[in-house]
Image: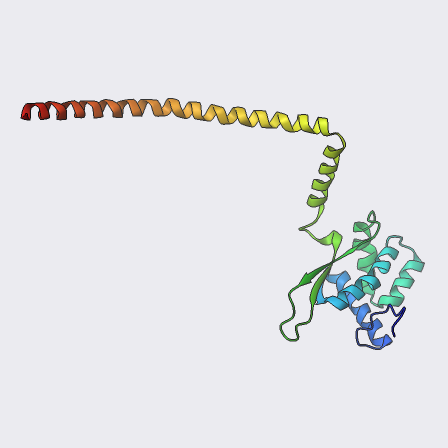
Length: 195
């Protein structure tokens, strides 16, 4: 039985698993987004997020602890430089796992794991929209009044355009009708003469 066995072994020995997760973490720090199997991505999240939390406070002890896990100087520089500035105000949840279609060769479940703060699609624009929604939710009356004002302005503009369009279309229609009436009169007079 496997009661209490919470480690995902990934089919590797302890040393092989540590090396794998260290390399994946370095690649994640360098590229900000990597594609791997779902099981590895889930294990990587558990491995990498405590290291990213350590980078929030830049001191010698934290650098040494993180270096004991990663052993790559460029990754440490990137982590304590660029990444620590971005994640400074985030209380956790630095990574996001997105499932991808299965791999063609062996039908393995694939996933993309990325650093949340470095995604341009779901970035600050989405956070700003969420912040604006929270502000309007607090005071519904002021939000409703603000929403009502732009609606009336747009309605006024819509009503002005058709009036101008009708004035322009009146003149050509009148001329066309006159020509049709004279043509109809000539046709009627010919019919009466023929009879």
